[in-house]
Length: 174
Image (cartoon, rainbow, N blue to C red; front, side, top):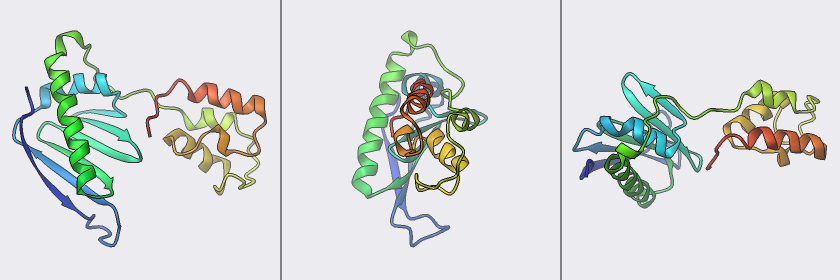
């Protein structure tokens, strides 16, 4: 078992303390840096940073950053949600470490959709029917995983299918 214990701090963002969401930083009592490339491979990290080593995960509308000595989680509803995510991460970290001989480490993030490729598949009318100001903004939201082909009323069935096929090659869990 690599990660046995940690302490946590729950707080509102200093840049805007009236935000309703909370942030959490877990300070790890053990250095987990050696497991990061394995954790990245298992969880399909959104981003992998080499210096200092860190895995950035996107899950259910929040960013989770795992470093050697701490874990940061944003956009939490409450402390119970932070506890649930930290318990899950502790299990995943320890499982990746226990099984690292069977895991190919990965030192880069998961492939991401390209905004220009999404935009090529959109009508480019800037009609605003999707709720966004422009098709480019809509394409960015699709690339982030916040919108999908079904959210563009101006797309025909065939074009919607082509965009869906393109997006299908990327793993979105949020």
